[in-house]
Length: 232
Ligand SMILES: C[S@@+](CC[C@H](N)C(=O)[O-])C[C@H]1O[C@@H](n2cnc3c(N)ncnc32)[C@H](O)[C@@H]1O
Image (tube, rainbow, N blue to C red):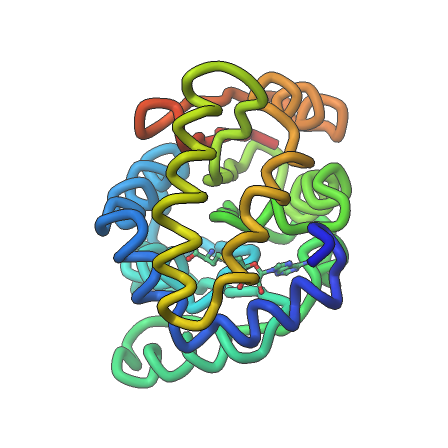
């Protein structure tokens, strides 16, 4: 599959949706839950805020945020694929006290009003967009001035021991485990998507170019993952 091809990416995530959460837990040994919580420390969500979870998938971050902005804030989870959104809605049905909304749409053209959002997150999404610069531009556009956003993803490492370990992890753990679930092709895609993903300092550069006033990249998990902290 061609990384970044919007139609192919959407179809892939429609197909993965039913196994996505279990594979996430297996392949990260549950650590993705810690990384997601770490990402939120920058956002400092407050009751009453209107927050956005871009590329929300089944809504892990949407749910964490929704707990924080109670009782009168709201969280919008936006994703291009219908199946993960449906899974999120199903989860939300059991937690009706949370103010969550779901929208099928493109993170590059959300259709949301300019400067209408108090804070935003995007976990493992930016890498999948046809144009990560366009994704950051759209994120900046919808945020209120001074508000914060955070992006969590694999840390793109073209060379060195980190790159070697990442390749080893993806080829000898991720792809074989995914193959067991019948999703070999889908998870082989991760390595290709990383090859076209801007490295840490380049992500900071792009963020400044699209108008963020602050952009800092922090490696996580021994440099295998990374968090881009942003302020509009
Ligand atoms: C790897 S999953 C991450 C899901 C969730 N954020 C998490 O961390 O568990 C990537 C998600 O991005 C969504 N996605 C990919 N391209 C997108 C786009 N252009 N606009 C919105 N969502 C997109 C996919 O459908 C998928 O649900």
